[in-house]
Image 1: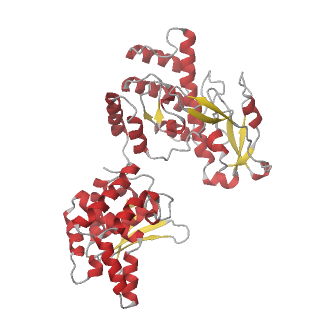
Image 2: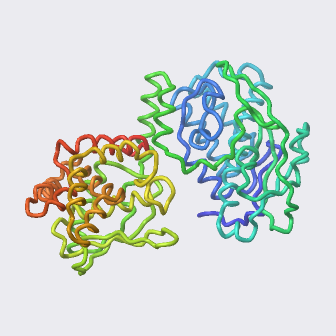
Image 3: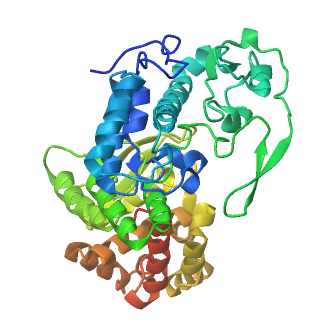
Length: 478
């Protein structure tokens, strides 16, 4: 059952030598979404990559890493003490015959290593949970400012961390992206939400930078007071692209380990399907058409962070389908499919294309097809197609306002995206009904404007490849 604790009541053992007190749900959720990542050294991944990965330097075997992860998970979720974790660590080391780990061979080395694993995971998961709580819209409305609080129980306080204690800044100040604690090994500072009354109008401190040369010879510029690899806000990147993270990290591992890692990920992680973001009618025409279209879409790509909206049936004869959204806020409202639609499956895919364009890429509430750099190759392919050339010819030859308005609409990037997306889904899924619907439009000799709104197979190939690249770059292509 989720623990309901006030953001001002959560706490952890600052010394890191006893029981971890009062775990809270955001903290547990943050840790449990991580993937096990085999690494040789602590800096094989840095900064916000730790938001996605659970690592123990030197633990390269999947089963060893998984047992260590389970021990840390129980430490967080059940508030286990460091002595309990040390006993579990000893049992896991013996079970797997793990040798060569840093700290092995002495009691002091083992105590140091277990303290680092225990305290680092508990403090960063605590910080990430706090980040999630502090960014809750309701709390931000009441307390939009954050205060840095130094923990005065540490034996060797960092002077700069002490100087930041009591500092109040707006929650979205860039300072927090690099200085949200913990800010180094053993750092026990924290952040608390405060009202505007505590803000004195002072700018964030400028303490300068220093150069750290890593083992691979690369020089890193870091803010003074922040340890190497700690200049990030734990939890802030949690909505980042998971598939891209997996592929990037797997590329750095030896081939057998990388393959095992990706297999483990595939078993544990499933990216959301587009169909998860649409609620369908219980029965009827719209449900049947949408079910077929969404099956084709889900076979081609996944997606992340798409809101949920209803797909409804409509009796309107003014449109075949429509994606509706709020004019000013950009909030998605619904997709409607008309019973008069002659291409129902293709129409559903078309309107889903609008929905994804509006809320799946870039800034939610804006149509990414219009200017997002990710779509640049697609825009070039569209511009160079024979169908677009035909539409431009029809525009030049238009003799009445209605015809001109219709062609201009077909030439809009958001409309060309939706039409090309629907044709791409039909092509890549090889859905027979949708392919027939595309062909019927593209070969409509009686209506050349309507025919030019879709593409012949050869004309469409560069466009399809560009759409492949868009979804591949996001890590969503299947």
